[in-house]
Image (tube, rainbow, N blue to C red; front, side, top):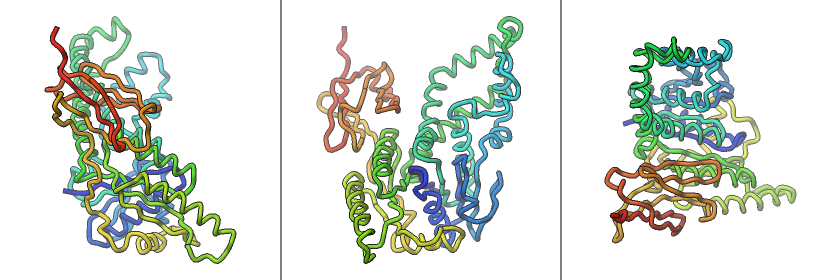
Length: 392
């Protein structure tokens, strides 16, 4: 069983360098390691001071790197499905030059980046896969998209298969629209299966974990707190926080003393939120962290002395538990108040919305005849009570 560690944080906090330090250390420890960038503004090549291509490159012994190009991945791995989408849009009047850019579809970049990581993991070539993600908002879109898309496909996929079988022969003549053919549907079916596997992989706490990178500054701290809460909302395991660019305590300068006091206040604030989560500080280096020699500075200053790749389960994640009145769904949601949360339900899902993010949590099949009877917060844990519906 391999290990996947995903790094994210606000733009400019140094997550690429910290991810690269993890990858470098992994390789030195003898693990076959791949570091992957899913950020469209790739800078792995800058950190390693070498050009990287759309395919996997070797950067050191036991260490490979890849800057994922999602369009390249889709064109090579899902060509039939891509052609079907192009034909569908072309028949609706969209110009051909626009069809060449699949950024048109929200989430498509993120989807094919993750599917590439899934394929690499399933190949079994690498023992550790280190993922350098885009800034916070894009990473949340990246990680939640497989669950969201598979939810829609699960509900509408049977209808889609019938529509293709029945309407495809007449769609071009009657509706002036070209539906996907059998080959494309085969790829779409494969996509659905891969989405299920992808969800299982990302939510498997023995394999995948998220590590957040922050700095001791107000705006970064506030975004990091929200990021932590959203990761828990979507049931991802956060097992580390790295606070970057910490000033040394022994600076004998009144100007920096005030900065140090401010940093200490924000570090304390993060410690209060990330209770139980390992927190590591990265010192402020006088020179840029580039190249393998620069990355080694982070390894020695921050990663030495602990088992960097150990599986650490901080929270159990969402769980349905039996209660006297029925069942309780437990979900850890730090840093929010009950007024920040909007919740309702359908016959099959519990729907939670916080800010601009919404998640549909499917009810187990045995609880489809249960409904929400109450909800409360206890020690940052949202407890949703479910009781059996009264028979009419």
